[in-house]
Structures are given as structure tokens and as C-alpha cells.
Length: 350
Image: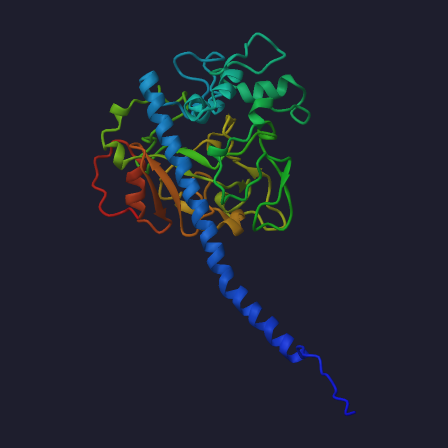
């Protein structure tokens, strides 16, 4: 009887290595496409957030016949402390004002119901110095704590591409720096972050859509004589700066970045109006002449700033959302921030 040998079929080591290499190449080719698709979805969600914010502004104006203030702090007509402007940058912000119009009525009512004469609860809406005074009423600046409701993350106020933390930490490693920095303005610590700010002015001056109450009463749509479709209402501005970084003359180094300043928080201004608004001055270009990976080198703290490559999304007074290139011409960008300059705009949109 003749025996025949049976040889089991299988892959050789070389064949396995070839298959693995092919799979690696395919993954390498597909990964950028997958990442691009994910970013496109995130950018669309960000656009939808801004649309909701624009609609909320219109509903607010319809209800109150005015546009919100950027910061409800001190004002010149009814000063909180004599003639002092100590709290002109401190108070609840414009994103608080529109909470009832983005289906956050409960959050708004919890803030609104607080009484300023009750030391156990946060100060009422509209109280100048509310954030600092609340913090100090609960201990020294190093031991105070935030208003609890202000820690609430609000999805519409966050861009899904943003890499900023949900809550302002005590220390933060500013991208581009090699060491972590303490967060300045201690009474901003612990509050929920936003990625959107209002537009406060142009190269011509503070002629933007919203301002702190110290500067002027709230505007109305009728004050926007350049037209709502030609004037920015709010922008992406998702970054922090070092207190001694490039914006102050480049005195910092990656090993000595100073404190992490100007955190964007939806509850308002903790002694800093950069937390709630931007401007379109020539010195504050979109993305602050840097990138999210090198945030430390931002040249200004008043810029629109986005985690979307090449520019930032903005919502205009008419509620339309546009992506503006970081290479937009300075004068055109400035004019888009101005409610009444009367200047032609030319081509600017994408």
C-alpha cells in the first residue's frame, strides 16, 4: 500500500508580512479621509451651534427690544460703588441672557432667582462684580469656589472640535509651552467653558454688536445701520493666552509662559471682558497669528480663534453662519465687526 503525504495549506511568514503591509498601507490611506469626515461633521455641528445662538439673539431682541450686553457689570448711569469702575469687567454675560431661548430656561431661572441680600446664594443677575464678589464671599481668593450652576456644560456653547477642557482648571498647559501655568483671575476657576464670544469692535473703535454695560446701554437692531447681513454678532474664540506671552511683547518663553489668562466662560466676565468678546482690529487677526498647537504664541487676546483649520466660523446679525479665512484682508474683517462704518465690503465669504 502506497502512502501519500498530506501537506497542510497555510501562509508563509513572508506572505503574512506582505498582507500586514498591505493592510497598513490601506489604513494609512483611509485614515486621513476618516479624520476629514469627522472634522466635517464637527464643523457642521459648530455651525449649527452658531445658528442657534443667532436665532436666540433674535428671539431675545424681540422679547426685550434690545440686544444683550456683553457683560452686565457696572455702568455710568447707576454705579455700583460711587464713581468707581472696579466691576465694569465683572458680571453675568450675554450667553446667560439668551439661556431661555436655547432651551435652558431652568438654568437661567436658577441664576435669576438668587437674591443679592442672601449671603448663602450667588448674587442676582445684573449685579456688578457678581463673579468676584461671590468668590470672595466664600473665602479668600485662593479658597473661594464658583457658583455651582456656572459649572454646567451647555452643549450649544461648545464646538466639538475644541480641545479646551469643559471646566476651567487651576492650572493648564498652554499648547506651545513646556510647563503648566496657574490660571489667572482666580474667580474664573471652576466655571464651564464656551467656545463662542461676541464681536465688540473694529479698527474704528468699540462699534461692535455688544459691549459691557459700563461703555453704553444695550444696542438695538436698528443701531446696526450697515445691515445685519454685513455685521458679525458672534465668533468662535476658543483659546487662552499666557500673561507674559507674545501679546505683551514676547517676554515669555516656553519654560516661563506666565499665567493662563482670558478663559472663555459662558457665565460672564470675571474681571476680564476678553472672556466674553473679541474685536476685529488689525492687531487681532483670526487665529491670532498662530495655531491651536502653538496657542502660547497668540499675538492678541481679542481674536477669533478656532480649532478648524484655516479660519473660524462666525454668525452674522441676520443669523447666517459663515467660515472666514484667517487670511481675510484686515480692513474687510474689521468692517465686518463694525455696525455703522458705512464702508463697502467686497468679496469676503466662503
